[in-house]
Image 1 (cartoon, helix red, strand yellow):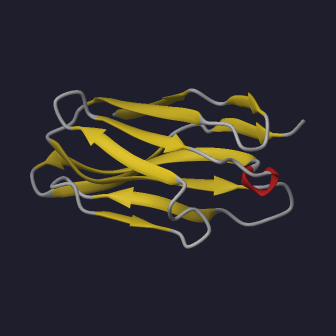
Image 2 (cartoon, rainbow, N blue to C red):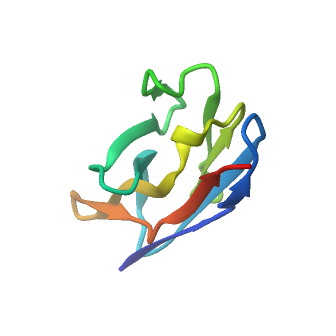
Length: 120
């Protein structure tokens, strides 16, 4: 079993920063891609950012230049630094990991989600 535990969500004013963290634990051989998705009320889950084991990153156009994804492979942890937050960034943010559990088996793992609310 693999667990992803997110932290760092909360209420922030427009223009402010917030940092999310997600730690993976359990039966992990290695982790390939790690990333973040989000889901706003009444909308489908959407891609935010992703980072490979080697550190290559990709972002949704809506967050480019404002969000930065990073990871610590020694801690199986991925981070999302969010700056210049906007009300439209309000959503539940989900951590994602493509986990190699050994024996050439990889599984898609998701965290439970953390609420980010951008409002005055």
